[in-house]
Image (cartoon, rainbow, N blue to C red):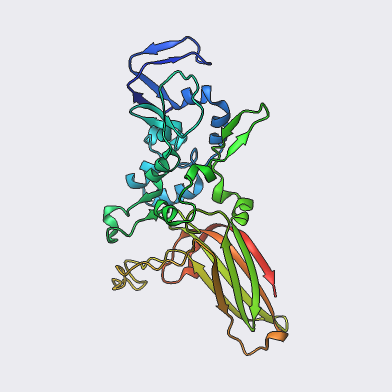
Length: 328
């Protein structure tokens, strides 16, 4: 079922729509957009926006907590239109017609308004918001705050679209904004986003993490994304020491594992993600002399299925991308 959005303007669609239709109040839908914007629609069809509701990761969480709070962003057209996920008009429809970013003005069968801030404003609807009212989290904690991170970054003068909807030249020389939005689902893109170098100091691992043109914290977005930094010492064919650290927003649980209320629940949320060059040291405590033990290390980008706030190493992992690894 296509999403229909009521727009109060006259529309005359004559491109691939059969008979020309002119009405005083037209109901555009996602199919109308796809008929005229075939190339953009093709890239959108493989995007996470299109599969915002039906992707397995979201469905696992939604099955456990089928809250309208979650559905409103992942299926803004309602359950009857959930298969479309976040469709064209959910981002581009406005009371003034179709709104988009700066660009060339072309003839269109509907009003078009252009906004210099569209490429960021429209993202803010679903990428910056508070916890739901029943979460018990203090106001201002923010469940996602990517837009605030962006404004505090060295890339605040760019829009989200500049990076996440890059311009692509087609075979016919037309230039479009690629709407596939692979981002964190593209392993190569994730590896390019972070320059990682490692050195060894005794039995310690020292990593340098330098974001490459990333306009927000790394990682950003939902609370189930984190970096795992790990290292092991091996001597005589055995592991003699290991250490792991998780970079994320660390939320204290409402209750402890024994069921008792957690007095630390409302403390400020530790956040060791980074938005600029960062050094991380992992100490591998061992009596083994550094010259007689091999140190292996890795950095993984993880999506957690179920968070264990008290023992993050016991969290269940939905999937992960190995960003870098080595042996020293």
